[in-house]
Image 1 (cartoon, protein in one colour):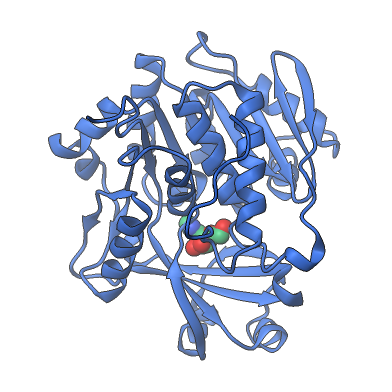
Image 2 (image 1 turned 90 degrees about the horizontal axis):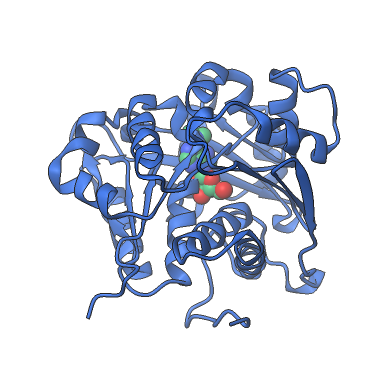
Length: 343
Ligand code: 26A
């Protein structure tokens, strides 16, 4: 029998293949990159995709979150869309999503290669620099989302998750999902994704923000939001309250703003107050690399919402998946699956 959570979680963003580059610090210097950042590749960065690659794995921030969400949900709970090319990398993404139990509903642009993200790890994986060439992911269109066979999954969903990185791609598709969520009173969850989104895609972000029932970001994205939106404080609690107070379309739900901060406490603002949640520390000797920790956190958070759980549970499950992610290389989680220790 199908579970009552069947396709309860719908996600949209950029399906990317992560391309791990060997060479750390030297590569950062060669291409003028920051040790911990996420950027869109400019012409000056294109050479990086011809550097020696140590491994490939499925990436794309929201696609990672959706795989993480599926990790703690019954089979067939999650479906993800975005645009890929007609190539080997697209096949690798489909295979990896299939393996994780995440349903891929990709649109295919046969003329453009699947998007790639060069990942440069330094300081034993404590820092990661992400340089994305969106390729086909940049060609996602509203028409694909509106196809009856795709929109049926939107209708079926209980929670909708959009990675803010998609604000550079197709705001119309994001707004269609956001409006559906508001009409049907489903939680619409938006991740700010990277500092460059509130900095350089402010108008796009501001057009979607009124629909966001939950905003997830980390401390650097929160700071970038504050700076671009005239929030005169560097205190994460003040920023969380300011984002929560931004105008809202669906007033049947008050907005929750979740600001993660690595191993430090997570601040959650809702209804004019801030609650602080402290994650368990992963002992240093167990940390393999922190790439994808924030994606895994978001995955746990949205899985909990789809299961009908409240914020406390969602944060705790998010913290657990984030911790499990950093104990494993890349943006993946341990196989065979670990069981979430709480009921
Ligand atoms: C538009 N950009 C820059 C991006 C990304 C991205 N996912 C979607 N759009 N830049 C990096 N990532 C993904 O972030 C994950 C780590 O959090 C990488 O693919 C990586 O898997």
